[in-house]
Image (tube, rainbow, N blue to C red; front, side, top):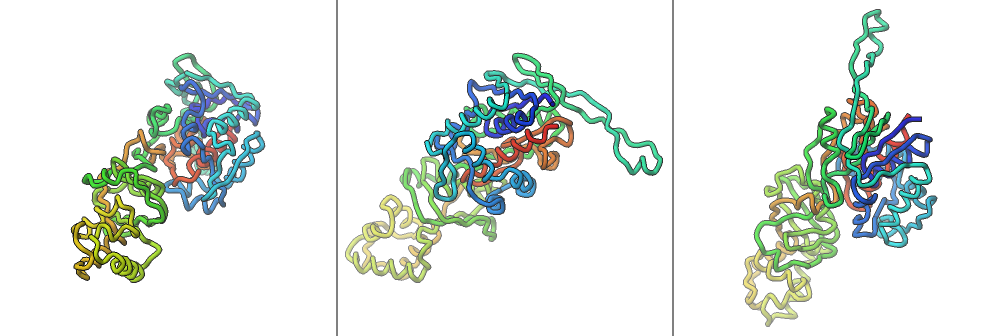
Length: 428
């Protein structure tokens, strides 16, 4: 039996604590907030989409970074087993559009309560309102195997630090393992303030540059202020880096006071957060179900119907009223121009705007609004089967603190559960 300290009481930490404790280890979970699972409470707008009911291969296609690293732990503890875990511990679940899995109650708090109950029943000791200040290590000789020994030579001896205790502002906890599950930088009000990255760097780990992920996009200009609150459904968005298409998706988006947000925009943000955002070409196809020829016929039909109207009134059946001024501005057509005097060139310019309405991005929203943190502890320094550090024996990392992230749909919480389970279940 080992002594295990879990640092962080979110999704990954709670699952790691449960997995370690169920195998008979002595587990202490340390959380600096006044309650566990503070970020879980705001996940999925308070409903908590905690996994996605899909195959592992389909799941991996939704991973932005860390696909190869995550493959093993996802097969070991896939969405099916996560759903079984919650149901076996008394949570009624349901599956909604896009295979998103929620508690039947639509209360994120029920997900946290289920995890807490599983930990309590497994013997986990929970310490709230306690902040970890240091992970103490000692050094131990580790003999490098074997070619040297087999050849009768003196083997190389390396010094491998090993975890011996976790220090907090209230005490010291001797331990054999310290599992860092402190989350990222997103939503800092929930306690995600980067503690895990500092621990990692102090222990000699590399931390991949941290970026906002799954967040809104700030646009250049101010035209979007007149569109604030406008939701567009069944549109497609395309992003190009130079001439290369890096993203194309169909779905919903939303204009806001800063630019754009919504499902397809959030996914886009995670793909472009390592690029020069102002240099990207981003366009919206407002009518993706219609090819240009079919859309042109539709426009001509509306123009015939409203031939004596101004153009801004003739587009009332084709576009939301809020959007018409911007589309006409991009098209180079005055709002007051009469339909019956429009030229063919102007109509084709309008057609082009409808199929590729430009958005000039300025930057991404900050960590205070980002759903997840992109970047983190370098995966090359972590054992993908056990989540253990390759630099410090007994030190493990799981969840958002690692350089892994995925699209929306329950994928990021599943990653937290799978990596947390692997970290706890492999404690020796």
